[in-house]
Length: 168
Length: 168
Image (cartoon, rainbow over all chains, first blue to last red):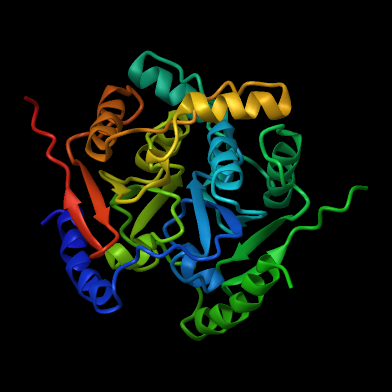
């Protein structure tokens, strides 16, 4: 059985539970958008104690603020009213384990094409969080940038450690 | 108290639980990557019965396959060994409630600038899923495209309904 098939089977149990509480249709307060890494060990709902309806969750390789993250955040704030942003990187991130040039060269060798996108690898978690915060603040399309905070989730403890963003 | 502060407080409870099970550092099988909408009602871990270490989770406004999604999927498959992809859109998606031109014109009127990105609104959930699957299959950078399946999560029931992708 494929993993996908196994997960679809688990969804039947979830569905029974959702039906017992009358569905998920009601939106909550939705005042915050979370931008986090796609890492398989990071359960954003669990780590923040979220309940359905509370927060938009945007995730990608690294938890970076890319152009697509700006698109999602612009929609989140302008059309759906969120006001705060939480960025989450984490210890042991795969993005620390290669360089952009290594991946691009491997892709080019295998496919004959070099990607138009930068892979986004980084060498320092806190610096990457600070760069992502700077990208949000630099975008004209994100109206609320006064409540943007960045964290590194320590996988050994599950604890969110805030990144110091005070400028030197 | 800001919502962010409340969520950081809830993280303390999560951390105690993570510590009691020895941390999150162990990676699991990681054979699947999930691409889902950022919607606040969608708890991907719960909906698929995921445990930490099982699946990469990529999320954005709409659950679309954008260039940044291709970046994340390429890293997921080539560097971290995932082989299957699950796409999840959902009923009542906000992306059905506006047009790209409406949002771009509003942004331009307010900021003086028109975004370089397309907002990605759509009018049909199944069509959008099919378009996202087609983008994955068209990318030279995603090596495994034989196990890509698309679903619409019904928010009334919590049930994943598979999108028919058989070509006409």
